Length: 96
Image 1 (cartoon, rainbow, N blue to C red):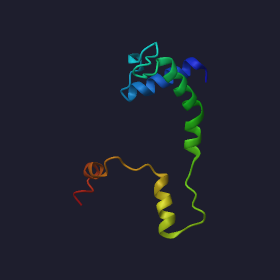
Image 2: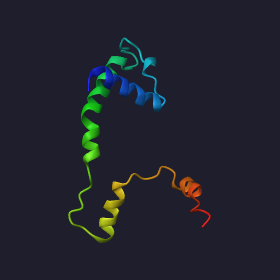
Image 3: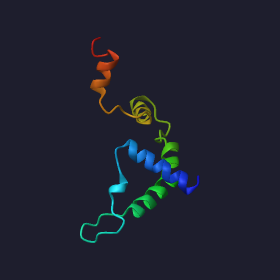
């Protein structure tokens, strides 16, 4: 992926999360320690280029364990719901 495409991807993901890095300074401020836009983009480019693939391929080691421990590992492979009570209300499970 070329750098312009990577920058556009990073900025789009930040915008979806409500983050505007244009509010960061162009020049480092030694008093506050606020990072510059360039420093943040450099760190995010490195992160996006290396980390997500490794995270996506990771699975918890089961070590051939079955039963309750194996079930606990299997649960960790699925992302937990942030608000299960709301989700159960939306799906009608709370009424049942």
